Length: 146
Image (cartoon, rainbow, N blue to C red; front, side):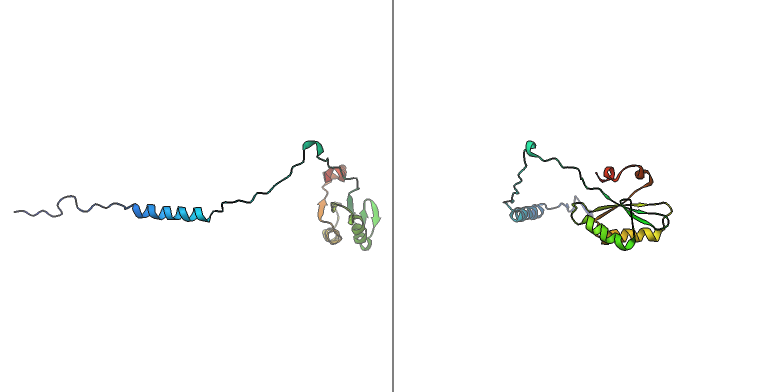
């Protein structure tokens, strides 16, 4: 008359996948309903190759501000002073498409003067400021602009 403890296989644990499949199908239906069916199209008209216009290189002389070690300023190699420089830059940039100003500092120029010239050019309407490196000084700003 023996009793057996725990006899047999016992309870078998399995995952019931039916509720999981039901939830996935409901989510699929929700996402299908939420996605717009009609995606608006943007029509783009591309001109034929024969009619494409070539961009002409700028014929304007680039603006180059020079600053020497003693604080003297030049605009396109013409001497000027700080009080007139902003007005001259504004006049020259007024009708230009690209408002680019190159700045050529001597190596011994004072840092404070250089910052003042940068600020002055920006306030005068320059959108892009370019600082010329020593090796760039042998090249013309035309080559740097393109």
